[in-house]
Image 1 (cartoon, rainbow, N blue to C red):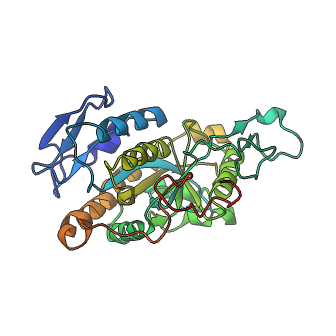
Image 2: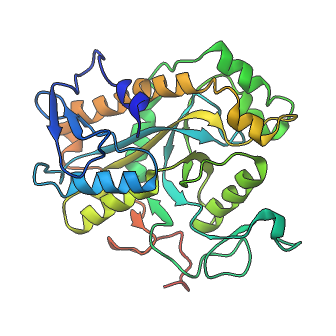
Length: 336
């Protein structure tokens, strides 16, 4: 998504993605090239930050006459905020669900009814906690669970990076039992889901609101864990490509490493957390490569035996509309 996330993949021993640099019209003016190994088996695209940049860059890539992506695996790799109830800074997460949590009605929290826990509530509804009645199609994406499990297993073989500063940050959460995982033994690899919003939020009230949104939008199956600004946009552009038989939507892995907490520890304000030091940033950036390279090598090394043919999903894969076939198990039957 941005320079630090990209550069951690340069100058590594496993492969050289700067051997080829291919300009593609329509990419971000900040990142106008796709970088590839000499044989073209591994490529990297930096899409830019925010939902519009992500969708525009991926759409340009997918529909470019310079690319042939029908058998390509996509590893979405970026840093994110993290829910301290579920994981801790420095950890690497793999999502099954990506939820566009801010695609809702919103009333300023200072003007909400007394019985509303938040100013956010789904479109076409009358209060928080109801499944949206007006659906745009990008609210939820579900990716291949069998592929996610393989990526998770590969990433667990990595020795993750950590710092004393990150450990000190985690210790601030030790006083609250609900944040036990925030004060766990350093960075780890975690299976949990991701929330997308252009707004970079901070605080317990918004965190709780979007945790509830994740549960509602996924029929209680989603685990609100990481927070970022691109993934639903990226996935929607890839889904459009899949509808045109340009990509295989079952070959997508959503990986996010945790750089900061989405809410403060006891005794710290939301604004102080947001604007204060971010000791999780360095391990999050480095762990993108350390865990991610295990996933990339798993696919490349196992190409002919396993991955060329593909990993057949056993779960529903696609968007909230069922555009690629099948019925999303997270959507009530009454909706469609």
